[in-house]
Image (cartoon, rainbow, N blue to C red; front, side, top):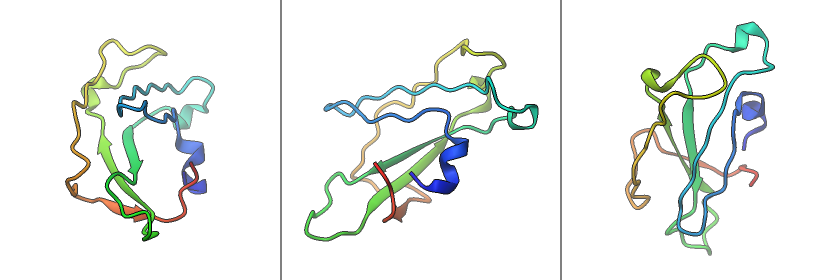
Length: 101
């Protein structure tokens, strides 16, 4: 993860062997000016990459729809991102060489 992003992270997960993950976050304990969210899920991966070439991680991000953002500690409804095909190149995808696992 980038150092400039650390203060903005609400949750961090490493996927299971099958690629499944679940994240959640809330703003409890943050100053009131940091409680309005436009949450995103950012995915870093090297799936299908040639290990001989150090091109860094592929990075993609997806904004969570506002109807899944709630006040309080617990969401009333979970957002299901579905299954992502990491062989595809997603719009806005970037490379990140300085990612700390």
